[in-house]
Length: 312
Image (tube, rainbow, N blue to C red; front, side, top):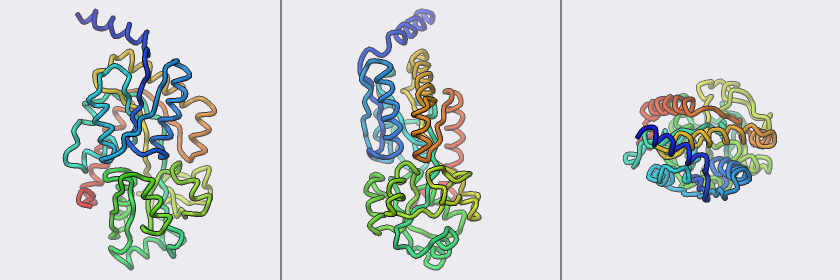
């Protein structure tokens, strides 16, 4: 029986894919999850000769889309591409309807991106130190937008609060687009977000960036210092993006996805596009993604406990 099952899985992988594939992107269009999903979808469609479509299922901090994939048939035709929120959200939301580790088969990382501390242009500060001084002078007055509870845009400012001993108020949105719109309009004074999502607004001077959470300055924004340069090395962090299949997907199909994702990320034009967005192309094995996601879940669970983010 075991030999027969293995043979069947191999046969399925050799024929795969024989029908269209959905990549579930559980956040709104235009963000880094959506961008990276569309990069993969275009190249996979060209290679496999089957339509690979991106299905944006935003809501509940990514858990609506995650649940859809967790409960999908493990046949390789429903795929999840999402951010590090996948393994972080269960530590902050009380009733996530799946286990982010047990109910998914890891495929590969796709890219990582630092986050920018962005402010509305009218906020009267020019550096991180001036920003922190303002927050300390007005405890509880400054609010920050996020793309949803448990997202990196929520937890990164919670980490900043913990590191600096400041008190600021979380304003969660149902997606990043409206949050950015309100930030530009001055409805909220600041926000953290991934470089690819906001770089056009920075170039157009509709937002200002005070610092980036990367280890070194990012290529498209060389004028923006790192938090470490500003005296806050604990703020060296970021968000990452990866691909998962439903648990129990045949290993041969998982291997096809691993091979293709790694190939696409390493293509010169794709590689350059990711770098130009201010992100870093990443590839790897399912074992590497599995180990990394588990370590990240532990790391951010501690941040959530220490900051009290679950109550914010």
